[in-house]
Image (cartoon, rainbow, N blue to C red; front, side, top):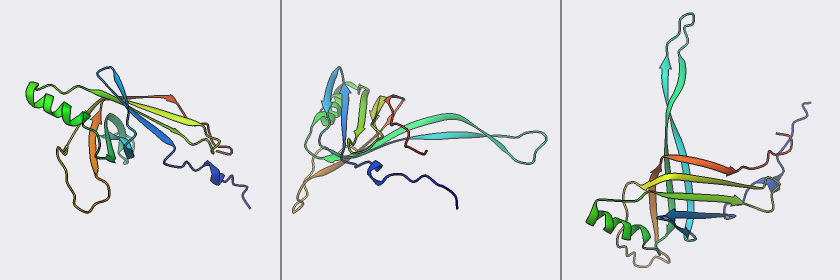
Length: 158
């Protein structure tokens, strides 16, 4: 029988053990109304034909960053920026910082900072949903770079 290491169940990270901030024009906001966040890189690969093999080779030649969030409909910051964009044609870039820190795990914390962020897609200006307990909204955007100042520790046996 193979002696295979198994992840300890307590090292599964609880999703609510995180904080999210966005920094806009020098001001840092605690985005405490956020309920879900995701950021991802989409890689562009280029085919590389090679002499001596029938198999196609590949090379990553670019990457694009995107993010999405679900949050309670209880802040006006992005709507105010949208109004400013309407009046001036300028929309400022911002940073998003996400730190996951479930103290019940042995992996520690991880912080990712997205830089050069912009909104993309629809921004709900006014919203009413009769009979709904709480109002939520979806935000999405792109980013131009990222940093990882804190990383999780490697799991035992990994």
